[in-house]
Length: 483
Ligand code: BES
Ligand code: ZN
Ligand code: ZN
Image 1 (spheres, rainbow, N blue to C red):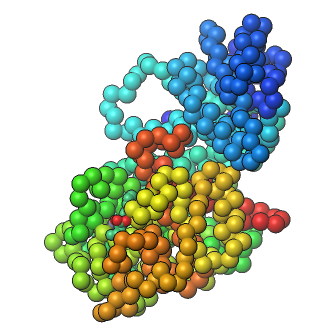
Image 2 (image 1 turned 60 degrees about the vertical axis):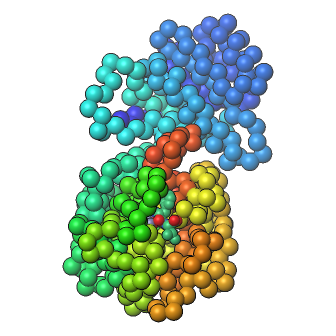
């Protein structure tokens, strides 16, 4: 359960408290015991970045982020401190936790709260015997002012969206097929005030989305194509931003079946779709004045009786033909249909987000989202900046046209894979670009999405990394002033 967040103007000295300090001094009134205060001060002065003091029914945690010239690194230190303190905070089973700051940067309390909320998440719906009676996280997180209401609202919406997306990414395919995934998208979108349309198999056939239909052939469940739109009256962009999210609810590889352990984590191959939904839900709930559309093509990729096969030639939504060189390169096929469908909105920018290639994961591990772009630099610069601030960093890959040479086909307009494994993330991006009639930023999140162990508050399993990035990007895009 996610704790409830509220703002307080005063706290009492019997409440569990976290204090983020900017210099080495600790505020008066935090400690009632001079000895404890002396101890905490000595620890901080000797270079400790955090001190945890347990006294009877409360705790006092001091957090002193390391100095760094880059403010975004300091912010990340604070979020990580919350992760590092999570077990001690849980062990005390405090009903409430106060977060305050002293001589720290503005909104440090919000960063700590964010780190803590993201660290508290757990996917425990299938655990029948929850550890009743054992330690618990606080039910209430009290942010000690000054902290502005807007940033509390944003924190609330972002963390709700991350929980929502992580739940979907972690949900096993036995409980989440393309149809039920679309239902979840619809529920979330409508509850946030968005317009939602779900295209069923018949409509997808009528639209001749050959990529999505080909991947779906081996499945016994029909595909879905979800469309979310947030268009408030006061939107500031004249042409919409279209977000496209990969919604492969399970990727077996199809007939080119994944071997060894390569199938593990493939229930999370719809992370892009979950992220797009979460982002739009958050911006809508926070009332951000931006016109944004989300497109989420969805299916599983299985080697069923009628599965598409290597050597097939398929015709896509935009009438281009594609030779199938590998059925495991399915993501780009369903995304390509969505990217060409995006043309009807005449978007100012398309951003697709997808667990697309093992190559991106091999290149950047879990530390960066691979970014490829043919869009104006103002967008990639803004995205890079947002990536640093929320610490979901993006790293550019070259997008030279020569990388498209190797996806030429002898028998069709284009092939879905290159003959070699070299530059796999880039050739996948180049494939998508062929279907984009408007500026495109392609984000490959394969390395950051499904983790085998915690990377601080980006917990193991589905992380929803990319969600905070894109939400921040849209918020900043809609904000007045220079980007
Ligand atoms: N869903 C996978 C990519 C992936 C790999 C995501 C590891 C997360 C972790 C994608 O559909 C895929 O199978 N890609 C292939 C493409 C290849 C056949 C050209 C890959 O990267 O191996
Ligand atoms: Zn695949
Ligand atoms: Zn895939």
